[in-house]
Length: 451
Ligand code: HEC
Ligand code: HEC
Ligand code: HEC
Ligand code: HEC
Ligand code: HEC
Ligand code: HEC
Ligand code: HEC
Ligand code: HEC
Ligand code: HEC
Ligand code: HEC
Ligand code: HEC
Ligand code: HEC
Ligand code: HEC
Image: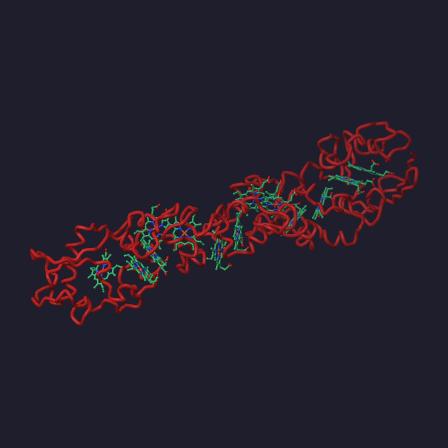
């Protein structure tokens, strides 16, 4: 890949001599008129183009050819340079340049051509039409030795597309890997101060963002949006395989996971003021979509926002902006993307596992002790009415037969006012007193319990 100019001092002598002749005599060295050594090297006949280009090296401008070139008499007349001169460089190139410039090989990472002292692989020592006396414009000069594939991505980082390699790489040397002008994220912060600010001031920062931007972004470009190393959600799956797998694997899938933006709908990839990098509070997040009736393909999902606006007496978890203790927003194997099993039907034979969802917060003793004085308030004397209704082999009533799980309009114990039963909104007629209560649902006549 290296096309560097590997002229040694010895061959330089010959080559320069030869070239000087060509320059001096457009007739390809056939003219016999020698130029006196005392004359300037640049004249109407000799080195006529020297100093004419857009950028001229200061010593050339000053006509100081002999600070770099040694012109010695050639008594043997072996060279054909006018004036019987042998032209050589006063020093090897690297040392030549450091006569006037700071050495460029003092830092930890030195660019390979400079390690070889090869300043002239990029710079013309005299003049050039290009900025910095480069032999070609930026970034083409770099592509003499590096593949230009790095500027051919579908999505390019603007400074790279603009050829501003020097915005990030020192051309000569640096103390940082890959000769970057700054280390790690500090490089990115130079031009993206909002990200530095965000990591400092926002409550939650995504761990890999603190570590290194380049874990997710290719600094030059990539085929994905925002130069991501892979598109979302594949990007996230390298570190969060479980969440991403649920898109396909879950028995109950959640709509937004299949959306093109997927994870980005709910999470900020960098930082946030919300737990779990959420873009907004959970309630606001969920209700932003659940503000209308939605279709799952197997049926309808009610307008939860309207429901919660009409029913202000929310169930404990909802008071704390918490939907995810019951629902997995990524998808689940249970009905209604619930995190644990919960019966979808009005009737179910009892087992502990069927109420795993409710029992993650409520004591199962309220349903397993046939007689109790303490486990539940839903009892007649010591007869546990939860047990009576729920704990049956056949046709046990599920919690939903009596309770609202999200909110109600102020009922005690979140008992429903109406229960959906085969399309009929069956009234509960539940009233609760100090020592018990009464209910008169469609299932049976009015019944009273006393504790
Ligand atoms: C800063 C040092 C420096 C100065 C000053 C300098 N040269 Fe050179 N010159 C070089 C180097 C180094 C080379 C060899 C180029 C290479 O290796 O690619 C060279 C090569 C040449 C060559 C042959 C190849 C070419 O580039 O044309 C000519 C002719 C030449 N110089 C003429 C001059 C003249 C005339 C002057 C004064 C006007 C001058 N140089 C001043 C460093 C210098
Ligand atoms: C005799 C002193 C001298 C020598 C030898 C010398 N330079 Fe320079 N060079 C200067 C001066 C003076 C400037 C203008 C001030 C500056 O930019 O430092 C300059 C400027 C430059 C620039 C900036 C040009 C621009 O306009 O952006 C480059 C690149 C450069 N030199 C490369 C070299 C290389 C490569 C060599 C060795 C082949 C070399 N110099 C040898 C004195 C020298
Ligand atoms: C790989 C290519 C490359 C090599 C090799 C290289 N340079 Fe440069 N150099 C550059 C580029 C690119 C710039 C910036 C040009 C611009 O945009 O102004 C630059 C700028 C400079 C400048 C002016 C700005 C500054 O940094 O002071 C000097 C002087 C210079 N180089 C000297 C040298 C010397 C001396 C060597 C050999 C030790 C050398 N360069 C080798 C690419 C190179
Ligand atoms: C004359 C050939 C040559 C030119 C021109 C050249 N490079 Fe390099 N560069 C190399 C070589 C050789 C390496 C070391 C090989 C490697 O590690 O892949 C290298 C390595 C690098 C590295 C890796 C860090 C390091 O120093 O090891 C970066 C970054 C780089 N070059 C950037 C640039 C940029 C930017 C330009 C244009 C201003 C440029 N190169 C021009 C030859 C060149
Ligand atoms: C926005 C900053 C930025 C710009 C602009 C930039 N680079 Fe880089 N470049 C980087 C970073 C960061 C790395 C190190 C990547 C890594 O370690 O994974 C790198 C690595 C490289 C490497 C080494 C590649 C390797 O696989 O080791 C080369 C060569 C390189 N860049 C050349 C260039 C060239 C040429 C340009 C201009 C066309 C350029 N860069 C512009 C940030 C930049
Ligand atoms: C020299 C300045 C500069 C540096 C250094 C820099 N960037 Fe940028 N970056 C820009 C500019 C300019 C844009 C386009 C405007 C914007 O989106 O802010 C941009 C845009 C981006 C974008 C959005 C691209 C898109 O398609 O939407 C990402 C992602 C990015 N940069 C990441 C990085 C990372 C990661 C680093 C550190 C490796 C970095 N940048 C370093 C200048 C820079
Ligand atoms: C965990 C992966 C990840 C890390 C680490 C990461 N980003 Fe991003 N970044 C993304 C994703 C995903 C996008 C959004 C792309 C989209 O719009 O869909 C993005 C977008 C961006 C954008 C453009 C949109 C915006 O938010 O401004 C910039 C700029 C950016 N990132 C800079 C950075 C910087 C700087 C760092 C390091 C401090 C960094 N990123 C670290 C994943 C990451
Ligand atoms: C519909 C909104 C939504 C979508 C889409 C979404 N998430 Fe989440 N995600 C959440 C919520 C809400 C939480 C908080 C769960 C909690 O606190 O237990 C969360 C939590 C997480 C967590 C932390 C889990 C833990 O146990 O700590 C990770 C990791 C995660 N999501 C990754 C992803 C990935 C990757 C994607 C895309 C494949 C994605 N999320 C898509 C809403 C979403
Ligand atoms: C390079 C690995 C990596 C990538 C890629 C990655 N993450 Fe993370 N993510 C982590 C690590 C590490 C944590 C911290 C885990 C912990 O604290 O237990 C984390 C935590 C999270 C959290 C929980 C934050 C909290 O407050 O607990 C969410 C949500 C998350 N990531 C979402 C995403 C999303 C969305 C993507 C894709 C845009 C993504 N991650 C890409 C490594 C990654
Ligand atoms: C970006 C819009 C969007 C967001 C945000 C959103 N959902 Fe959904 N949700 C939907 C859509 C569309 C459906 C219906 C399609 C499907 O998933 O089958 C749905 C379905 C559901 C279902 C019924 C699933 C079924 O198949 O029975 C539940 C439960 C649910 N979402 C809860 C939540 C919760 C909890 C949150 C907040 C953590 C939330 N949603 C955030 C769009 C969203
Ligand atoms: C205590 C557990 C729990 C909490 C917390 C919870 N849900 Fe539910 N959710 C359920 C259960 C159980 C169902 C099944 C339907 C039923 O029994 O009414 C359900 C059903 C749903 C449905 C489908 C309703 C339908 O039948 O059409 C949506 C939408 C929904 N929940 C959204 C949310 C949102 C949004 C939050 C947070 C504001 C939330 N849930 C909090 C347990 C919960
Ligand atoms: C037949 C209707 C009915 C069914 C079915 C039912 N409950 Fe209840 N539940 C009640 C009534 C009535 C109360 C109020 C008792 C009181 O305090 O007077 C109650 C009270 C509660 C309480 C408050 C504490 C207590 O035990 O007094 C919790 C928690 C509770 N139920 C959870 C559940 C769960 C979980 C299920 C499903 C496993 C369920 N219930 C099934 C009617 C029912
Ligand atoms: C994440 C924990 C959590 C889960 C899971 C949970 N609950 Fe609750 N529940 C609470 C809290 C906290 C309260 C007390 C605040 C209130 O009255 O809403 C409560 C109260 C209740 C009450 C009223 C108790 C009273 O004394 O008035 C009923 C009934 C109830 N839950 C039923 C259920 C049912 C049915 C399920 C399963 C679908 C369930 N809960 C799942 C936390 C939870």
